[in-house]
Length: 553
Image 1 (cartoon, helix red, strand yellow):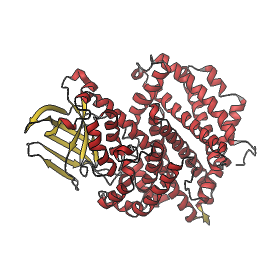
Image 2 (cartoon, rainbow, N blue to C red):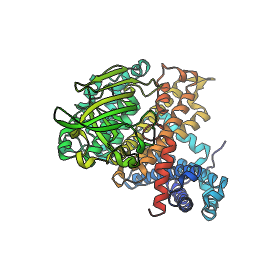
Image 3 (tube, helix red, strand yellow):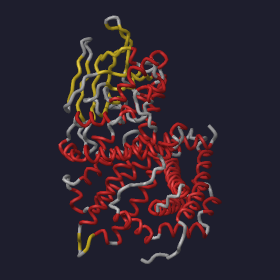
Image 4 (tube, rainbow, N blue to C red):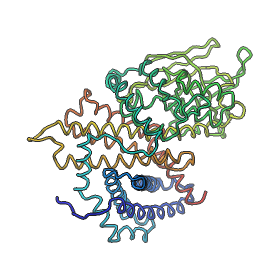
């Protein structure tokens, strides 16, 4: 199929698209906010709320990608690949929004805004962006560069971090990543030590506490590079310390900050998280693991009883940051929860037991998983395990603040997961570009076929949008706005889509565990689940925040 042949300014056309799509989704959100009473009636409108949340996320991603392209131009950088990706994704997001409105016009309630998306100029812009020759050209350029990401970040610290993390990932992680996955091994201590020596554990911890204080954008860029090498054995190593560090910085006492933050920053103390329970998944406000007051050898503290599930890395970790119920009144819900820093010894197997002289114990068994290997995720049984009150984050003032502190930590985790997802997608893109230049079928490399180029072009555009939404979330993180959960939502889906598309380009070899692409596919599948499973993230986080904000609440 031939190109339209229209010579256009990709960035300006993309800007026209995102402005129109933004106006339409704003009107849709306003209507949904009115119908749901500012989000109070979300559960009566779950399907539409999910639609609104995802469409708004796609439009926000398109806007972030266009804004990044404009900023590069202003800085004198002409990145043709990024600019074309911006137009392709803006057209895709606008077309998706327009189709959704047409399919459920009464639900959206925005006839005028919907009509604006059908204006001739907008229809022409969508067609130009989705023109197959444009998408194929995007794919050809990616194939020629083997998919490598060398985007100008316009941030010296982030650029240096990317270079350092990429070198570490290439030299230290890649050589062992496949064996860790196939043998379901634990990430070796030698790798953790080298990881620590580069300051990766202290990315967002202030310098006064021994961290690098590099900020959220360098942290996300670092996460992306490490995850491209291995999601489990590198990209996720600093997720749990980040969550606990955020809780301590937000609600810890001065003594607790002085005690724990330097140890987290140096990697001296490795962290696991204990939140999810066997019978309680995303409904964190109703967790049932109990902590009751106790005194042991004159030390005031808490005895913990119950079970935690999916506590990743809790075998090797030195502490578990555990969300527990310190107020037994069920009506207290989230206001009855506190965060305890639970010390333990490191264990290296798929099962572990931690007895205490005081008579308490914890025991755990790893849950077998198809991917995300290198850290092991455990179900932990807790029996009268004693923890001093000094280990309750915030001590007396932290009582009942655990839910808020944990959710704040999860916000950091979601931001980081956006970076993790971009890393897995980037690894998949690079692997696909390498493969299609080498694999010949019917007399030529499969990368020379139109459909291959088109598929890779789609991958490039979607990854570029997820990446820029994640970077925008890093820039705006302290505002506690929507971009972080949106970045997590979109980037994780992109990682799944891109890894599976890359696997299909490999044909039968892509299904072999000998090829890293099979690992990327397996690893990607967990991303829409942890740090807020996708439906909960759409409804209870993104959807609720959108509707409440539109209602002025």
